Image (cartoon, rainbow, N blue to C red; front, side, top):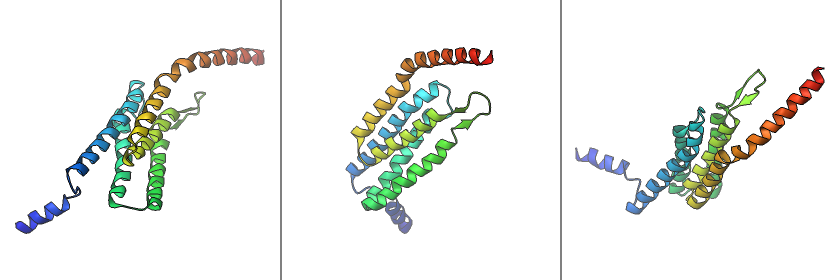
Length: 171
């Protein structure tokens, strides 16, 4: 029984001390919160990738970066890890993009871009670049929430000009 206990203790001894544990908790919680903030906007708009997806992507990216960093890998190896995370997220993003055969064209591009950016924020958190991650989240939030207020009038104006052009060509 003592052998089993020793093996369990050895297997669950990732952290050298309490401070290392606190760093992991802070980083993963921050990743979840930042990802959730971006996912909230997508959720409110009824998009497929909402709060939970963004939280998981951000935490996943952070942990894929943080664990190799804990093991002390070199910068060139970390570069390959980051490339792998980005490529993997690309496949997830591709699943959110739908190409339609009607006049609506393509949808899901903003959601895909948001998931991609959320992974980038998770990478920043995983690397311990919390200020950069928070700043990026604030800027992304502004793009998702504030830019539509400015772009809607432009889109409506553009649509009315297109309809006028269609009237001329249909004659």
